Image (cartoon, rainbow, N blue to C red; front, side, top):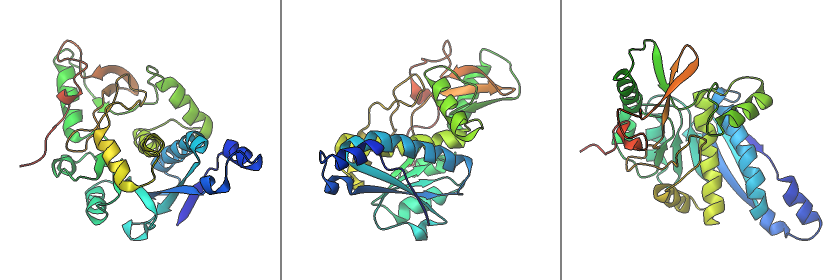
Length: 267
C-alpha cells in the first residue's frame, strides 16, 4: 500500500503556536485509490489531494490517498474509494463495501448506472451521455471524427484554463479526462467532509446524494442523478480542439443536463 499525505503547513504552524490542539490535527481522512501509481488518474487524484488538504487544514482534517491493488487491500479506516479501471470493477467494489462512498472515474458503462447502487457515484460520463451529445451536435453540423468528453486540456472557459495550467505546471503534461475525473472525486470527498464537519462515510454518502451544486470548472452547478451519474456538460472535440459544448444550444435547452444520457434506474 502506498499512502500519500500532504500535511497542511498552516495547521502545523497553528499547532506550534498553541492555537490549535494536536488532537484536532489527528483527524485523518483515508481515501483508497484502486489504480496504477503514476497513471493519469493517480496524478489527477494527487493534485486533488493537495488542494483538499489546503482547505481541510483550516478545520483540522488531513486527507491521505492510499494506492491499493484491489478492494482486498482497502484499509478499515477508509471513508471513500476511487476506482479508475474499466468494466464492472466499480460495481463490485460498491457491492463489497456498501458503507463506503465509491467513485467510478474510469468506466462509461451504462449498466453501472442503471443498477442504481446507493453508494456508487460516477464522475466519468456514461456512454449514452456521449452518444446523446454527439447526436445533438450532428443536428446542426455534419462534422466527422468528433468525440464528446468530460474534460479537455485545450478548453479555457469557466476557469478550466487555470485548472489545466496547474496540472501542466505540476506534471509537465496535459490533464486528460481520466485525470480530471479522479481530481473531481478527491475534491468531492474534501468538500463533503469539510461541509458536514464529519469524517463518517455514511454522512459523506448522504451529502453526495443531496448535493445541489458543485463547482467543477464547467460553467454549471453539478449534482448527481438518482442513478449516481454526475450531471455535467460535455465538450465536443475534433482534431484535439474543442469545437462545441453539449447540451447543444438551439437543439435542446443548454441548461438541461438531463438531456444527456439515461437518467433513471433499470426496472
